Amino acid sequence: MNVARRLHKLVRETTWLVPEGLNIRLTPSVGVASYPVDSRTKEGLLHLADEAMYLVKNTKRDSVAAANMGILPNPVASAESAG
Image (cartoon, rainbow, N blue to C red; front, side, top):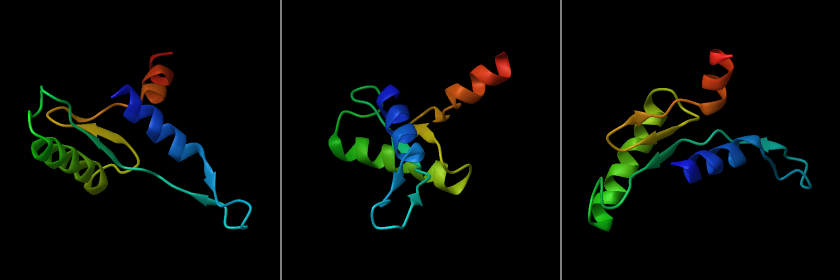
């Protein structure tokens, strides 16, 4: 989940195709499943990660969700609201 969050942050904070003059910003929806907790087969893992990704896409967008956990709280937003 830490890798998924770092990847999400990297993609979200990068401006793409700047040399081409396009300046594209992306908001990724990421789904995660883990072996062997969520599934013991690669097909099962892909299915659960895909379901988690579509949970993000169809609700909040621009976030990370884990199989059997749902959408993960944004660690930056959680730290800001706690402070």
